[in-house]
Image 1 (tube, one colour):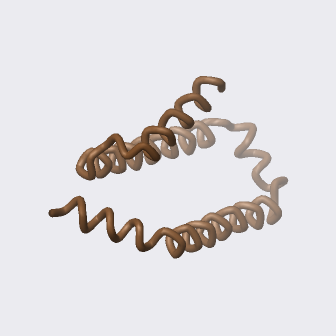
Image 2 (cartoon, rainbow, N blue to C red):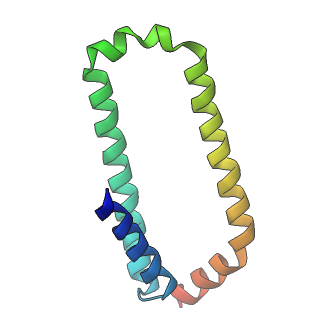
Length: 99
């Protein structure tokens, strides 16, 4: 767990120092998206293979669905707020990186 936090802190530090070019950032963005999809696929496969969890799925009920929907909606609202706050910075970086 410690190595995960160190990696995140190092990534944030390098990002803030603007070490990477725009093209490198685009490549890293695509790689991180791919890694996220693979991780989610593996998580889904693991859940699908767990008979005990699948049998108790009915016990989890509507509360689990409500929590999941709340997390999704919260994430979308947070993304919208962050995008609005940093829209000018993102636009400037995109314009500067394509020229």
